[in-house]
Length: 203
Image (cartoon, rainbow, N blue to C red):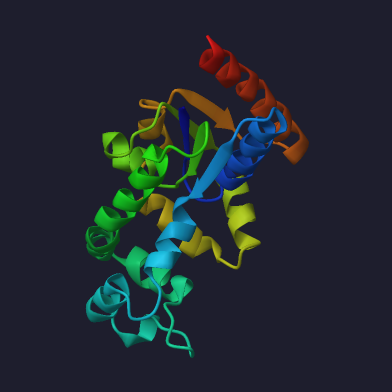
């Protein structure tokens, strides 16, 4: 069984890399499972869950939308305004999220597990991963990509400042992908990495 983690700052294209790598393994008939940490976190935010109640107690009712669900953009704005708020969020969500991720990574189903997680390098050895892939990108491109998702430049820069530096992540990365060009170039780079990973796994 092979476990691969993909992490990096916002707007670098982590999910594109994770999806492409998953497709390549599946194309070669590997039983491959893609684990999306963001989707798992969203599941934990569901109304009336323990996390949901803790978030409301900590950050207030104004993080909810009209359907009384957690509005992730509202929560994000509140959290990234102050470093202390980010620390509070991490203490609420991370222990349970890490538990869920670890359970899926260690499950016996699937030959290859690929984890798409922005906080992969922040969590470090808490997550049982064979190979850690860091996806990087220039600041201008990160801003452009996040603008398309509805964020303004100030929000993006604030979020990046609150995240672990790319240079720090590189120290514990097994592979680094610089997503500074086109999607075609990115796919070519991911394909080259896939060949290396497959060779290592079959050695």
